[in-house]
Image 1: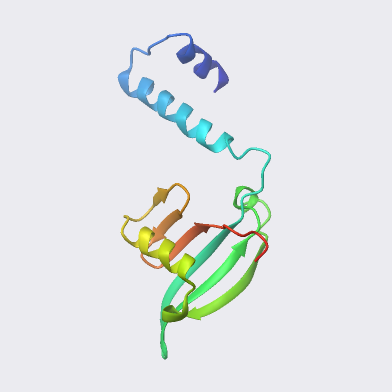
Image 2 (image 1 turned 90 degrees about the horizontal axis):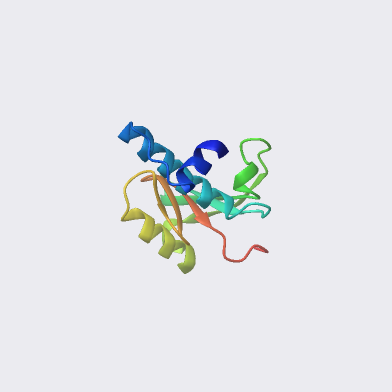
Length: 126
């Protein structure tokens, strides 16, 4: 991967246009991922679902999403009735609800689907 990146940085353009585009896209994605290198990145996972007493929202804190697949460190944080969801979380869910599935918004989070979201944590102590 580093050799491909060095070639592109050196001005090389691949004959296969699709390969050239894919390598350049990969460079951008790698750069985006590297900006969190050496940091922990806690996120809140929210799941919205119907319950007999109304819509509910479960929230689980993921200690570090970057290492989540290797060592899942999470804890159930809270279950809210949808109407009782704190304003900061409700605002983020509202923003992500306007997005399509599998969409990321910098500073807000990632929408998995209409019922599941990963949201940035503003206050890591809570």
